[in-house]
Picture 1 (cartoon, rainbow, N blue to C red):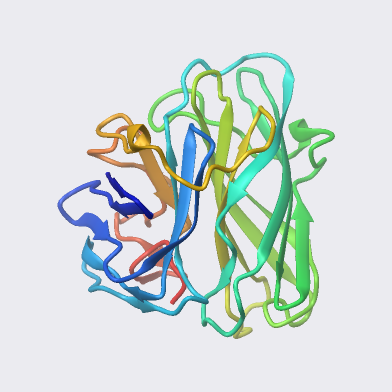
Picture 2 (picture 1 turned 45 degrees about the vertical axis):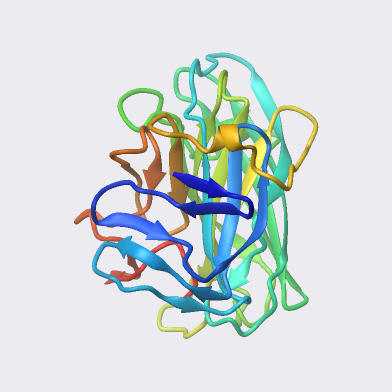
Length: 278
């Protein structure tokens, strides 16, 4: 990974997965010391991302990225509440709306199979779309979001749930939020997510909203500059909000991304440049 004064400039997971920020700016860049996040937008990417050439995005769109220190020593007992540390501004895939805002709460019930409870809300275009896992943060054991605690990658989870709110994204008030995430840092002190908000109505043409967020067990904080020491070499993970399943990255140890089973990132089954609005 290469970090410069404005944030993440590039990362290399494999010879075919080595994207660069290119002429984009880095928006909403921040870190809590374990996780860091940024949004590439307002330009054209460079480097290599599978078979897709560089893509141009407006400042209302973005490639949302979050990365950090892999989790070590996952607790086996107790329930822990996580504070929102920072987020990339949610963006709509067609760029028709200005970037929005995000709020959220997370709780993890630790055991041999930890469960994650989420209560998340995205506001964009003046409309708030909100939803939660079953049980919310009050009872995360009901959520169905189970953390992987063995094998590789360790500490990851995924879950989906219905949201409320009617607007350009959910024209009939029927949407789902799909969330991929991971625990991070020593003792699972931080937790990062990437999410996609989309219509759940078959055949309905509506844009999607994407974003990332970081949570931690300390007082909520967001540092606007990523320290050089957090650039990471082979001991960092990186992941994004691309498609439907996790995989371990190669050169960035224990990171996770979201390609299809075939190894080519997809959205709705169509290969694309991943982790971005398009």
